[in-house]
Image 1 (tube, helix red, strand yellow):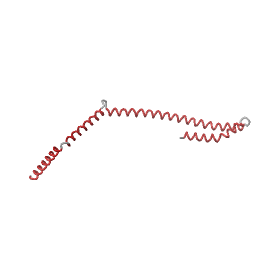
Image 2 (cartoon, helix red, strand yellow):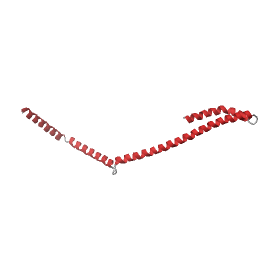
Image 3 (cartoon, rainbow, N blue to C red):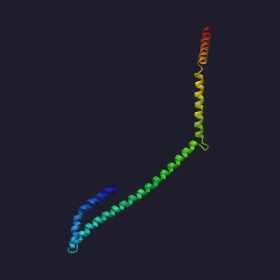
Image 4 (cartoon, one colour):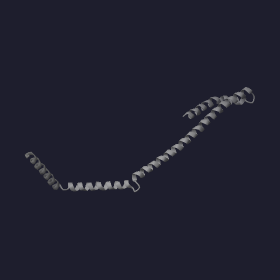
Length: 144
């Protein structure tokens, strides 16, 4: 941003000096004062150009350093992500095996629930037997 502002200021200065420089350039060979003024104004503009160029070179160095650090960080992140995936998978693909086991067990549980729910008579008999036992235990406790 600073560099961009410097370049904009230079452009404004150059545009304001241009007509004066153009006028002085026409009189350089005849008038010593015009020659000195031209050299002075041109020197000021040249110093500003050198300052901007140095700023650009410094910014370029900083951008290259930033790119190097960013590339290194990106590489390190990729390595750590690969390590995390390998850790989760284990050396023998444990995660994949565990996922398959979970799916198989879920299927078995679902099959057992389906079998149980498809036998309503047995569920009713089991519930009645549980109710009878609770009633018997309650009566025996009340009598003692």
